[in-house]
Length: 279
Image (cartoon, rainbow, N blue to C red; front, side, top):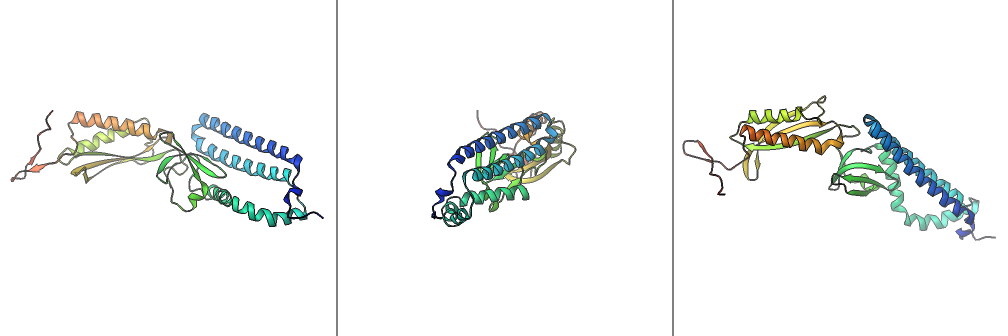
């Protein structure tokens, strides 16, 4: 009688080649699905995030089915096989793959609970960027300076994560501009308003605002003019910020609006601006 503790007796040697072929086909199919949905998303930009999410589910399902099929190809499932699995694999493989199993379960939780989705702009663990894939083991995030960050799925179950657009194409952008407390605030707000309403990247169908308050900036009292506007597509986040900043800078210069500076008041209350630094 065979020893049920010897798991090798339940292995089909011929099935090893089949399992390798199954895994290779699974990887190729997953790669093809990803490329296909990316191309279709580029063709239909208004459905890009939805298509990416469908592609993620499809690839996730392919990986699971491929893994199960390869296991069935390698092992002969008999009563003795289940005994061996319960005695040997449950201990050795259990310890070896506990982190992987936790990540797989966490990945399923992410897909169901949806704290973020593929295409979202997310802040996590000091990194900010776009979620490019949600895999069996990890989530991949591409930062705005094109660095690829790989984060294990189970990290998202214990740490806080912030999603900027929560599955939508548009996202609220906040930009701050600082001027001296003795400058023309009304004119400054008008310059910022003109800059955001004339930007080709601004999504003005959603509410936007230009707000102001007094703050301490660089050790000096200053007026902060804050622009809050939605970007048309998260891919244009930095393009919007750059365009608005350039227009505001030129507008402030044309209007003679100066940045914050230390002011000294005379005894009669009149503000005295310190002389400019020597050249």
